[in-house]
Image (cartoon, rainbow, N blue to C red; front, side, top):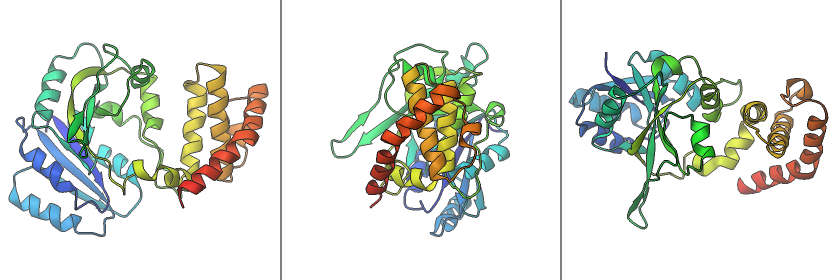
Length: 297
């Protein structure tokens, strides 16, 4: 059994996977497996990975599934994993040469019952030929939400204990193919903390065909998932009255987009606060929806 599984969900990304494959070949610590769940690609991903498997330079496990969305691919990958740790590296990201070694060394030095590691995720700005790495504003152990509330800016590399991650699968909603990862990470935060690794194992570059560049379209096409997320935010992560009303308003907005029934019954906000949130939806929510639709044109 390997120490860590490097998991990559992919869909029609044969043209980017080589960067991650090359970085895995350069790893100083070889105690890992690369698990790829192909979410119904129609390009040459399967043939490319088959070629790499034949080369034998990296331990690869390739799984194909019919196109069902990233969250289902992620859940599939977690179910198949038996290593101690699990890290999801997107198909347009790659690792530093010391990434696995840095994670391994940090994990051996952990203190307390932590659920994993939060590390940085470096962003490459090709136009300026620079790499941006942020700093942690607090010391661990900490939760992901506490880290951002303390002022952290930017993306993170999240390394999980596999046994913990298996307890918090992403919701799989019929008719939808995306849900924000935060919906499971928020639940983990309620019960667990992470150690911090002040290094950037992952290097990323956002692509025009990714979720980050198609956020408005993603929100409109997956309203049930977003309503579930904002209802959760209203319940657990609204420390002020203003935030609770805003999160409840967004829950109402996406629930109505999804033509949901029993919006009040399903809401984590009740009574007068729900009424105020509904009034805020009438004032603000429809403008947000129109802006999302404009962004998709």
